[in-house]
Length: 80
Image (cartoon, rainbow, N blue to C red; front, top):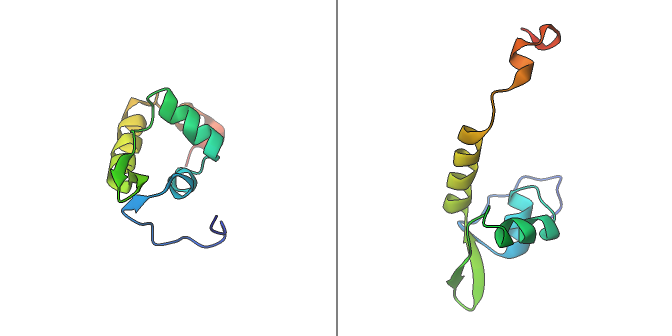
């Protein structure tokens, strides 16, 4: 697995460990998210399963839109 100290130029199609790292998840967390239907299924690319960076980005964008509003916005301690 790639060192977490450097931000790579993420490939468009990622192997399981790379896709998990892209999502900042352990492989076990990533597997559970796939099994529960949270993360898109892989596609067969060459002889291996790969995850599309664009599909993962779209999933993250949808998840951000579904997230509840940040309670810190109204907390005086976090006010700017």
